[in-house]
Length: 81
Image 1 (cartoon, rainbow, N blue to C red):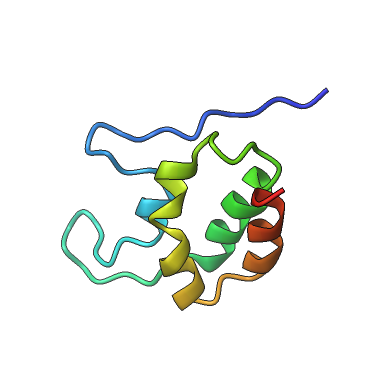
Image 2: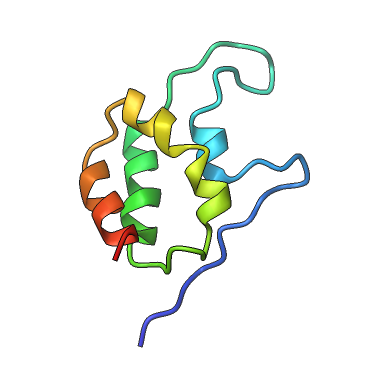
C-alpha cells in the first residue's frame, strides 16, 4: 500500500520546488538550483494523480525543463496517464 504525501505551500505560497528554484536565498545572495533535490521531488511525486498537486507543480515544470532536471520526460509521461 502506498501513501501520497501532501505537497503543500508555506505561508508565502512557496512549495519545496519553488524554494529549490528560487534565484536568491533569504539573505539576498544569488543561488544555484539543487537539481538533484528537484529530481527527487519530481521522481517521488510522478505516480501521484494529476490533480494531486497540479496547480503548485505546473508553474515549476517550465523552470525545471530550462534547468535540464533529469528524467522530466518520465515525470511528465506518468502525470499524463
